[in-house]
Image (tube, rainbow, N blue to C red; front, side, top):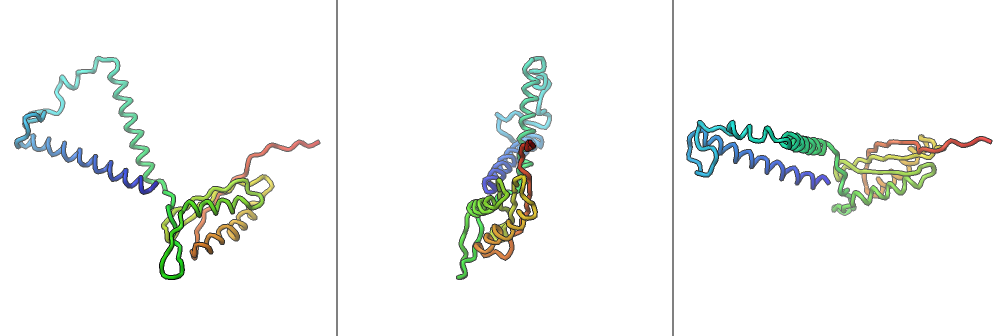
Length: 195
């Protein structure tokens, strides 16, 4: 996701920059009195970008203002989505594993996440586990979300997570540390009837 986001950012910024440079440069060239093509709408320093007739052309049409507001609203939403996407942490695509012979092997991040999820969910008292890896490929970080059964003790679930699932992940990847943020939630359950 982060690679795709970087490419989209580069393309959008490149296109926006190109459009701004071409339009701004051509308007400046016309305003400075330099020669511009005959088809260019602004050919001299006394020309205006929008004439009075252009500004008032659709003012009396009933569809004009709703369309303008809708288009501007969509542009604002797209800009907000793009801004929020900049701050999202991407998932780690791969983890570097020291193979012991001086070279390094590469382990897919999703594979390690799947193993961690399966091992965390297999412990008693855990209904569901979700794991996502972030950080660098040589220094990954884990975010674990555990949904606990009503009878489970949170301290026991964390102890087993650290001593079994995370310890196995560190040992199998050769990492000296795997910083982890764990979030625990209790599963919803119905109240028991007392007879």
